Length: 113
Image (cartoon, rainbow, N blue to C red):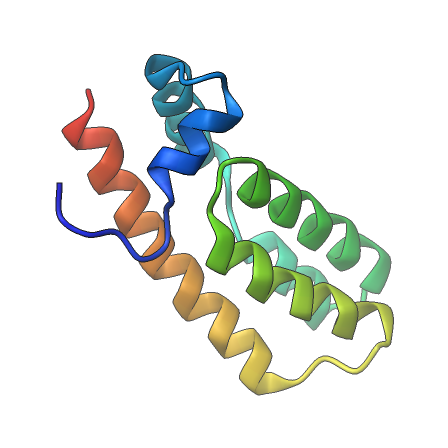
């Protein structure tokens, strides 16, 4: 497997007691069910409560799966949402990180199917 930047597979497997099949199943669920568009739609609508809830959920799931870079970027965004001071560069960084993360998750899932 090529070196991964966004997904720490070894740490992720440790989090599920080294059950590789479970970890891949959880990554697959993350890939299939996690969407970032609703978060940005809530921000566009000025619904900070919903945006914060969505950011918090994505952050938590990402952290639990050892998708550390995305968790960190979402945490930064979540803090800005709480302060109602969202910066455009943070939004763009989250979007870019999410896109690259999903590519890597898809690769890991495909290689372990």
